Image (tube, rainbow, N blue to C red; front, side):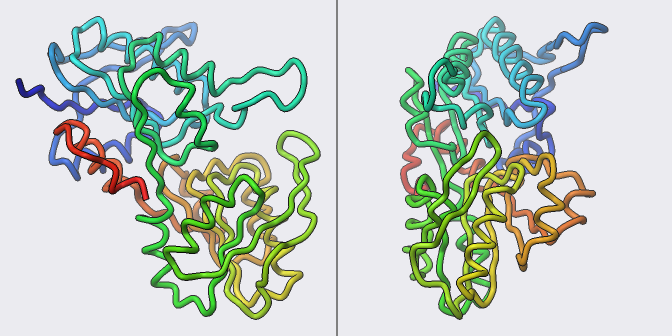
Length: 314
């Protein structure tokens, strides 16, 4: 039996959802999302979804709590409307940085969010560049984990005319991602030895690898306050890199991020549209936004058709 494919979008990143729908040549399904006067989320599905294969596109980006609640409530509405399968498409997974206990009496919120999604009725998750790969193991449902680096950013960087490129991991946790991209680009690899002083604060100690007179690309999964990024750029600049570019899949860009990027010796910051970037932030710094709509759209189509998505993982 063939189940009808339906795409729904929350309010978090409707432009990306519209791009994905255009790629799949499908309309976005009709749903009303509003607020009661006290701020509670109200969702009503305005079309029949009984027996449908439903994909809900909703990054849990800032405001994280509002967008997460929208996703949970929309999922509950779809489940009660008898949808056959509900897949949460998470271009950005909020609360992912707290994925383990690094000190006493702290939560593991990445696991908590996974439990909430399952309790709401999500049957499958399609995620993009999770902060830590082990988050997949927090779910008891299938998780398809895609990476924007190789298929999206490598293609763009290949057109930049980089001379003797070296890919720089801003911390030990980013080595796997940087190594994969360096292999695709036949580039060198460097690693920043970073010591974190506290949440949102980091100090780059020294650089492992050779960047002198080479074009360096700092690669990270997200750029939040840009503290890690500018520390890495400063370390690379001190070691004599010729050009410095930066890539971050998720452009959170909170607090002093834009000002830090503007004051750093960065030629260009490349991000994706996994999180919507307001025009004022995009225009205030040398930021290039690449789309992940074809990548997510292709994954959605293959999941719906029960085809392999493994070729999209690398």
